[in-house]
Image (tube, rainbow, N blue to C red; front, top):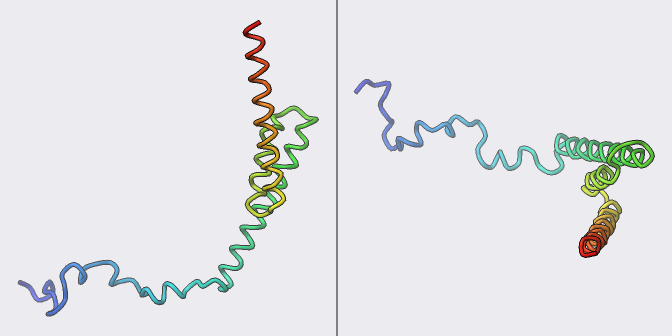
Length: 119
């Protein structure tokens, strides 16, 4: 066997040739590399919040505008509230109210359809 292909004594063949041995960060370093207060983590969290807030309010505003303009306002407004509910508790409460009222509306329409068909 050529010398350059020999496995050193005591080394296991699978671990000797694995890619994990080439990884410069061990498990301890990987756990502490991006801790909760690391500036990159904080910046990412704030950027994510800003994107959610701006996107949610934009979709909500478009939905509200669709009340008077042509478009599916009754679909877009809950989508905007759903996006905002990722960050705000008030949006979660409004979304629950919208869900309850839409379910009540659907049930009312189903009852009226059932009466119309039987007549």
